[in-house]
Image (cartoon, rainbow over the protein chains, first blue to last red):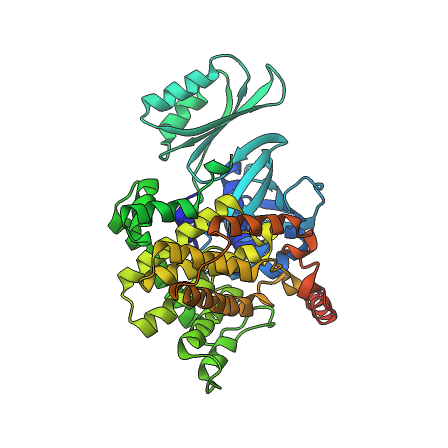
Length: 221
Length: 294
């Protein structure tokens, strides 16, 4: 955290956690899906479920899914724009249990090509956010920095191949986290970088034998 | 572990040891953290000040929230003939703070400093001081560095989120940040700035987050006004040489322990406090039933 996080961001009110944070969660979710969803089932947990109408959380989540930033003056009318661009959406309440952060959303998103994705994320205060699961896979993605997200086979050497590809492309790794369900099964990497990663490098990573999917997700702070 | 936390007391001691003003010390600290130079940091702060000024202007046009629950009070207060209870400075701080609160509730553009719900306190204090002490933009930008740095310490040792620590962590923190900044902008010493922040927490401890119907309106908007006053009162005490028996860091830690002890109902869930009064519940019921009809 730095002073810019405290004195900022500039945003559309009324709530940093329930409005600005919600925009960022929508942005991250659309980034993970890879494009603007054509269908969004949005499940709200805890305080999000209790108070989303009053905070414009619903508008904010839709705004993020459409790629808008938290200071976009159109946010109060996001529903109208979503309808105009043909995005189908519905809001539901869900109970994800006591251990889940009170400001949590579960997205079930479908893109134009019909592929879908389930994303869970929380707005953890002051507009900071954290995506904690993608398709049931535990991850930790904050959107503070540009990031690369992989799904890959849990085999030796994958991390070295990916990190050397980045190094050769002049990209510095800021943080790196690994997640896996089972030894030797599917694993995931979240690599936060100090700069945007060009698609040429993403394609090189995607071409590696053990990589099942790779996606670049722009920072949202 | 405790020693790893950011410490306002330590910064104050280091600034005084070096014979630096707190703002100069903290400008150096933050330029190191951000890897930028002094002008870049202050330019960023000035950009934020410009948004704050616009939020005040927007609020003073009398905007109303989408729910219709609030709006127009800052303008009403500004236009009313003062009954003289508050001096002009304090009165302006309340007017400006409430104006930003109303702009925020109307889904207008604000600077979340430190959060959207508490976004009126800093502009209230800063622009009242600007008006009455003729402070330069540079001075305000330096003051904002001090405010933000105090916020960093609070975020590290406690929290700035109402859902975690109640309103004391939002409007209370904003007031502590504004109080410390006000002291430095008016020429006080580093330790006086720390004292002002500590006094705010002593006075605001336990303030719960209890928004009616979950909206950032009642009691949030008036709390922004009253917390701007708290900041001015604490700065006045500190600038007059009155100390705080409890040091700033410990006051922040006390705020955290009170926040941890607050039940969930009093942390932004609209389950307690003003939100649970019969009037609030009746209004919320009617508001949400209208919503379903749409």
